[in-house]
Image (cartoon, rainbow, N blue to C red; front, top):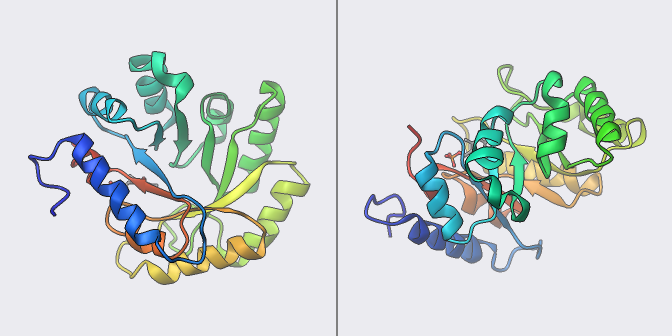
Length: 227
Ligand SMILES: *Cc1c(COP(=O)(O)O)cnc(C)c1O
């Protein structure tokens, strides 16, 4: 079945992706369930509405401002029953807003941000769940902690800033096979006692599921191409 066929409804696409997730997690070592994070960046409200109607409650956004426009304004009435993930880079001057608005921030990637999130969490009296973004491909243009620095960074986020780090996230280089990156991320999580692994997007979520993902971030294959 071609899941990007235009005649398929959003609800059909979601069902097809959920069943592919199911099929690709059968028999893997990690028996944890996989959460489908529907990446709603740049999608029109009509598609977000269709996704909500299909039963989706977990969404990922790249930018704080756009997330607030979608889930704090257009669909504010739904916010309380949703789980929202920030999956794009976070500037320190938006840390307070992100801490107040999101349930999960997947892009903790530097000490200065850890410091600002800790300060914001203290002011709010609550902190989102945090994943550390790892630059597994060591690409200069990409965010994320370098692999060699990951263990020390996680330790400092936990011990120095007392942050609730529960997982890791990566975006493999576009021009490489993703599997080695997913395996590397999974090994880093295991040796640091982290249970959550956010890896896999539209093109490679099944590979990620087979290699232990607990969260897949799927945008275009679910909603249709972004404008
Ligand atoms: C846009 C985005 C996705 C979703 O990408 P698709 O290829 O449309 O599934 C996943 N993760 C991150 C970090 C993104 O920015």
